[in-house]
Length: 275
Image (cartoon, rainbow, N blue to C red; front, top):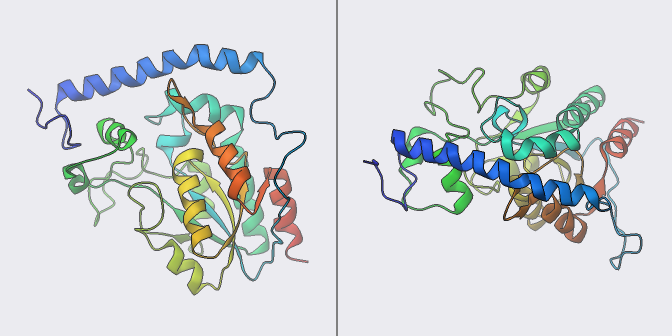
């Protein structure tokens, strides 16, 4: 018998865990036809040849620009992560891990402010009384789980840990590692405070995942008065029967971001900021 009712994320019993695992497998299998259809047509992510919206841009200045990466963690970006079956194709297609690494290297090379907004769930978070669909799934599969908010026990190498190739840049004693956000946006963590204390008003944004935490961070940063350039290939998203998360995000990025760059363009601008 399950330890929690259908509407609560609570601590899962063995039967619930098996159901969650089966659901992920079914979702992964269900995306095959979707991916084939997308591949048969033109690139669905390409910008329109003739857009209707006016062009805007962000001028990168070293003194007041920061690189912000959301959820640079194993559960999203590694084949070892619990979401790989639904995000792996997108992460691979966009070369997301290598592109995020390129951004980190470029930012550190010029001494740019770098901030990480991670996503963790502690044991008490599994006692929440209600969730949305994706929150419920994340709780069910143990995504971003940590054993304690006051101890690092079990963190190293877990799904909540950072990708190994990012660690030299994240753990250098200079990167701002924010308190965790809990749903999608940064409203509940200290990202805005940390950026304001560093006199930052422009952000180069990447990370995971495109239509969830990255997009939510974009909206909140814009509402707080930042100029935000999103790096379109330094993010990725799940492909589900409900839709392609990356496609939904790229459309919204075009609508609201101050700029939408490739990693190559972002790295060029970051390096030029030191001149």
